[in-house]
Length: 217
Image (cartoon, rainbow, N blue to C red; front, side, top):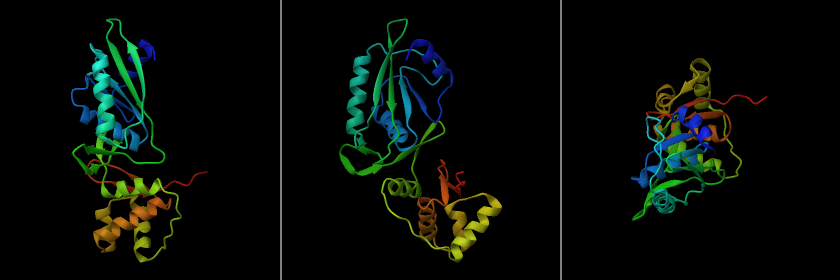
C-alpha cells in the first residue's frame, strides 16, 4: 500500500472492515478487534492512526509490532492469523497495517492468559466490536461444522414464519411472547432454522434480529 492509497483508505473512516488505533498501548483491546474481524468478514487494523483520521504514524514501530504480535498469540485462541504491511510516512514514521482474514473453519475467542476457560467471542457490527450473544455464538460454531440440519415446521415454527411474513424481523424475546414458549426453546429454534438456511441472524449491540434468508437466484 502506498501513501496515497493509505490516505484514501483513512478518509473512509472506521467501518465494518476498518479499525484505527494510535498505538499498541492496550494490546488486549486491539486483539479483541482482531478477534471480531476474524469471526465476521475480516478487516484491517491500522496502527498509527487516531479516531479523528489523523495519520500520525509510529515513532518506534518495531516495539508496537512486537507488543501486538505477542498479544495476538496470548490473548486470542487460537492465535490470530494476519498479514502485516508497513507504510513509511513522509516524516519517516510508520503505519502498521494488520490484515485479518475471515475465518472459514474456526471461531476465535478473546481470553485472559491466566483464565483460559473464560474465553469470549466477539464479532464486528458496523464500526464496533460487539460481544457475540449466545445465539450468534452457537450459530458461529454450527457453521464451522459440516452436518445436516433437520427440523420440522410445527405450530411454533408456523407462528414464527407468519410473524416474519408480516413484520420482516424478530428477536428471541419477541418469539417467546408470540409463541408463548420458554426462552430456551425459542433460542434453540431460531438457531436451528438459521443453521438450516431458513433464517439469517443480524447481530446487534442490544438484541439480535432474525430475518428470513433471501432465496438465491
